[in-house]
Image (cartoon, rainbow, N blue to C red; front, side):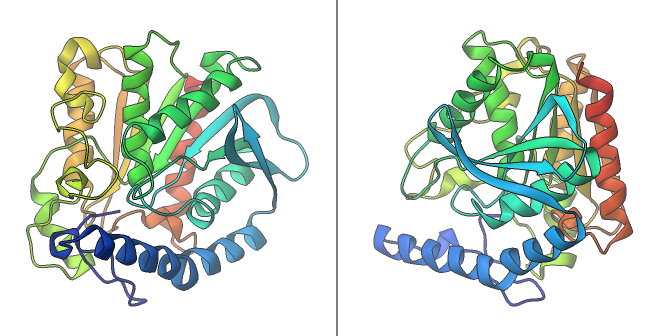
Length: 310
């Protein structure tokens, strides 16, 4: 989710990092946002999705990291597993955004989905989230071959997905069979910064993924030059090692330009990288399964994993 303030139709406003001058003010604003996004948006939607797409949800720990495990009701594929990295601007979303992103995928794909409650700001700093995801991934490698694991995330979770692959490459760990990045990218500015204002009521331009600019957040203690934060900085030789990668965005999404930039960089490096842009759709539009485009997006996501996880 973006770092600058915007309002959606429900009146929820994202923290405006530019206006927060003290750490105390920042923490208070994040706490308020966490409560607001859960009560006004995420929790009611998660309840509706669970009624629409029945799954069981089990709170557990894998590699000593808290996770929620989503298992389809009835038959499911026991030989493959998906890891979900929830959205929430690296400061929120652990319970209900996790459910929103995992319930439909588990039900429609008949996969078990492990959603990770990774450490975030303001309580934690980079690379805490990456370390947590890699700890869970390492533990799952004891049960599944790497090629039968897929990782996907939305918004901040999409950015984290790209960062996790960079970390695995840096540490010589076998990569998952495929990844999917929804509503996110590693970097890049362009038309998406302007046209997303149509859907978010923000005067352009907006720099949706400049989370490193905040003095108190998750990225506040690390510089912007590392490929472990922005994999595009690793160059073609580094990016060429990425697994098959899917990007889903919309023409009114502030993540449009970062998604385009990242997909193009991976494709130019020789990676099987697909980009699907949905006309008229905003940031993480697939959360709302009342939209036919959302079911199309989930179908695209699942067919991609089915093709590449082997």
